Image (cartoon, rainbow, N blue to C red; front, side, top):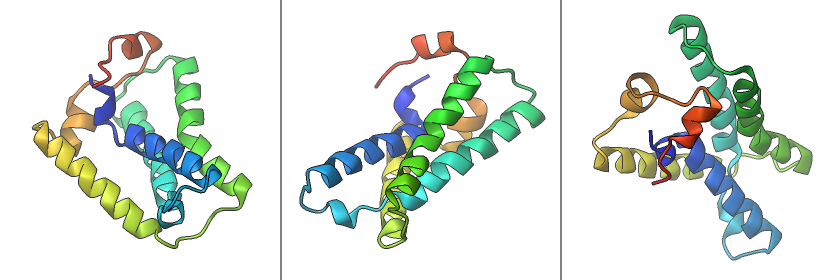
Length: 134
């Protein structure tokens, strides 16, 4: 398992970069809108969990399950708290990041089905320890 194969990691990393850019008013921060990405991060993960737990009958460590849901909801919660919800440049940001992600997967010889349905995904804390960062 490679941790950066997951779209969630891409979105979380971009969200952190965007937060830092916004805080320090780095040129161009206002052209990045992570709203749609944050929605996909949260609702996409919930959708994945439903498929994985209900239909594929996979089991998760409860604490891992809870922490992963919290992690996937944090960007959306922060946007709500900051009242930064708008869709200006959100679609453009989503398309650019998703296209880059698909190009990355293609360069690795993978696709979305491989990553989320065929390859093993972390479901326990010990699975995280065995993951490669790059």
